[in-house]
Amino acid sequence: MKNYKKIGFALLAMATGFSSCTKQDGIYAENGSAGIVELADLPSRTSSTAYASVTKSFEAVTEVDCPILINYTGVDGAPEDVTVTLGFDATIVSAMSTSAAVLTNLDASLYTVPSYTVTIPKGQKQGIFHVKLKTSAFDFSKSYALGVVVKSTSSGTVSGNYGSGLFKINAKNAYDGIYSVGTGSSVIRYTAPGVPANDALSGSLAGNPNLTLSTVSATTVEITNLRWAGGTSSVSGIDNLRATVDPATNLVTMTSLGNATLANLAGKDNKYDPATKTFTLNFRWNPTSTTRDVSLVIKYASAR
Image (tube, rainbow, N blue to C red; front, side, top):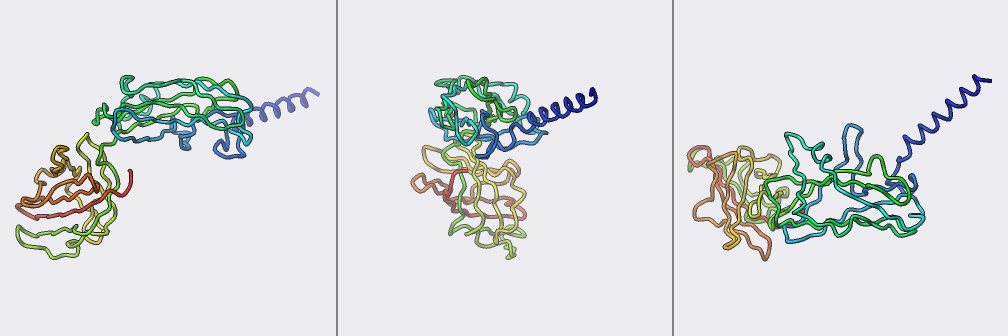
């Protein structure tokens, strides 16, 4: 009889343990576990990742709302009005920061929170936690983040996997985005100054894959995915290609941290048209050896 009891207790313990391990399986599915309170913006994570993380990007303005979605799982929604209390935990930012990608905990002076409690109405599945960001005051040289935590809930269970997470907060300047490469874009490669290579990599760039312009500062963007004619080969040797706009004149200065010889092409336009969100860029590098001349007409296509 004792052996049977032992087996029974063992099976009960296994069932209990299995239930606790799988309690949050399928939390993003309509037929998943019910009554789990979670940070819905977070993507799935592996067991090797301390916290799930997501990046949110916003225009650099005086104040912008950063909505953080809170889920109450289950097909029937909340059984009653559910009050969820949230907070921030700087140790999450520290834990997810690395030497290769240093994260800075977003200082309290750079945001306000109207309320740390969110109500999910009875029968509903979601509520929103609002953080008001002062993105125009961000230091663009820093990578900001917030560690967000569900501290308590009046009903249900706080998710063990998605009850806390990392929210990377990026501020974008007015020039940030994905840009299409249009007519008038070209590259000329030279074997020596004044001696065109006339190779397959020289020619029109129109229709090449889109370029990504990423915020570096309030007036500077880094340009990536620049390719030679034909669009198959990436341009190298000009790492950290940057365009800096003078907001007073909309004139642009081209530089490259990876090649100090890169500069505006004299006598050619380098400008930004805010009305059409179009850059006209002309620049050159290696002027005394294997010269490269690039002309770009790129127009804003979508947010990054």
